[in-house]
Image (cartoon, rainbow, N blue to C red):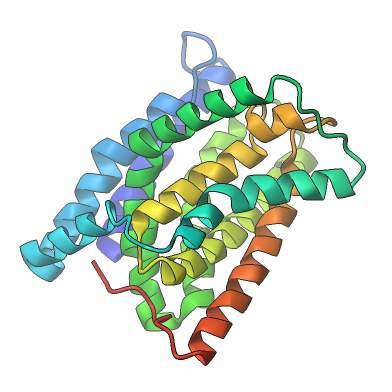
Length: 269
């Protein structure tokens, strides 16, 4: 893990700082989108580094086990429904409870476009991102420190590598502090949900990659939940939804343990 972070943190900060530098005119060419730099960091730096470190630590069998979790889709139908719908549906419910209106205009086409966007996001970025964070970092930390501590520690690294992205906008000092606080709070809650769903889905990285993508679709500006809810980008409802889904997942996990079902930490890969 030290080797992974020693490579990815400095390289990640350097890559993700480019859009911020371009936004403020330090790098010529005008504002640049974040997405190509995030994709380059994930596919060209983090994923190869994780594969290399896993190969050294656990051999080829460890690499095969890690990648097998990225395509593990055999778990319950109920778990799949939760993975796909828990966060967006709960975000809509929280938004409605907070007084926002929900519109169903052009719902079929909106949901169809959201599904296509979800598949693209999972295949292109979220699956490989979670192979690193959930499959490698969080799983190994959980075996050493337990579920909650692993979620918090992973969140610190996950949020930390994304810090330069907060600078690609006009922010006051108080605004920047608020953005950093939100980033770390959301990261902790998301990593906690990821840890719980890893246990509920037999360690499936694919499941938590889809879950990650549904969180982005629930909280992002212009995404499906934002289109369905009035009142602007649904940041607060999405964060509250993550907390609620985490609580329900924890209860389900406790009931599974009480019933003698399998709920141990996912196997390292």
